[in-house]
Length: 464
Image (cartoon, rainbow, N blue to C red; front, top):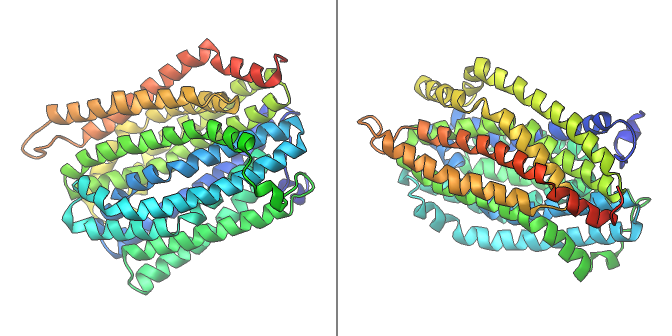
């Protein structure tokens, strides 16, 4: 394959499924890792140059960010699925209209996030009993991030369009450029100019804006596949509703997870600054460990969407076997790495030995859960690719709200001691492991019932 061909749309309805999945997943994995570097570099820079409290401030902001950004995550998910189905079906008019409507919806989502996010950031932090020592830092970080939310929103939605077309390489390239800029700006603003926590937020916003601009110009150069005229930006009831109908359950899924994180964050805050900082480190490393699973989930959505659009359900089943095996293999490797080399990773974030030791203990609890997440993501990806985004939403609601929150608070209550009067930190991570394990079990049971297949047959008109 010539280099130029890497940066074009790819048809995933032909060729060996494992090869098409790998060609798409590897660049996407690298891109997801690069995106995770945004928040990770923020944490490393403030942890090293400002201190552990600044590290805690950046991490304590994450649940609120996730909650308010759930709206555009839903639009982005709906965009990728609808685009992949239209592309697989070879319907140029529907594809063009869907792309234009996705961009218009992104603009609306950006405006809502900017207005709502800046208004409720500080009240939410106070409601969560955020320690006064980090409250101002958290508020400043969130305010800057939400004011510049358009870059993050448009990058995710525009890159979702590119991926729906089978082009995961362009999105990777643009994100790598933005990641390098983000690292440079982080060091300049924090270490050079002494801007502290607001500096890392500003660096991230500027870098995300650049990646969004690059994605947009790439789409402008792909008019051999679709038409991007002013008429296509006009919101059409049928096209917009289809994107929203598919995307909203995914957005609600992200919102449910964010709300659960907010509730658990309140428990985390009650355990003190050391545990808060430990949770930040764990979640940053967890973000990287989760990347292969999230990547295979997204890849299977695009792969399934294109093949459903092309009426090739036989390839969906082949993709399940081959893609599932690849995802589990990746997760097993990551589990081994975390168990044996986790302490090396944690030392990047802090020079406090007590904090590193605590993080190592907590990660050992989580490590085996990543294999369970691989199963959940692959099965959920296929369901979403068929247009069934409701089922993964209910599974997430069960595992994160009905299961994890009571388990976390129950274990915290049962493990109270003089050293940890509000409960031991193990409660946070044991509850997460329980949720991940049950998520895999429930996903497998529900997948076997076959509602995803019925959804696919509705799209294909009964053709397999």
